[in-house]
Image 1 (cartoon, rainbow, N blue to C red):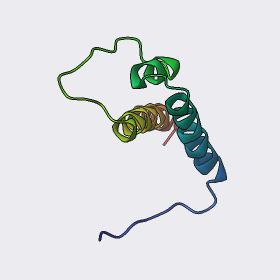
Image 2 (cartoon, one colour):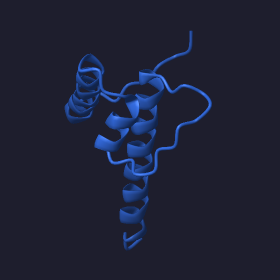
Image 3 (cartoon, one colour):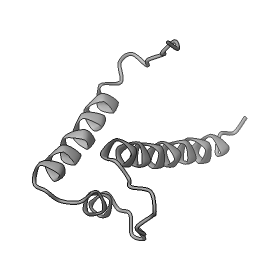
Image 4 (cartoon, rainbow, N blue to C red):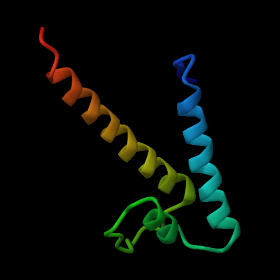
Length: 83
């Protein structure tokens, strides 16, 4: 088992993750497709692949995209620092 490191005090991050998973679960329970949920999350070009995408993999895909966006915002804001 690998060590896990958590950022304490990030209640907004935990809330966002819970919300993301809850919405995905609701889509699954309502019988909607993973592609429907990805479109709901802002993915525009979803192509059916040969490999079946699971709900867990789709959730990871969205989390990775959101993380990249946050890192880009962070890098852009740090580039404006005067030192």
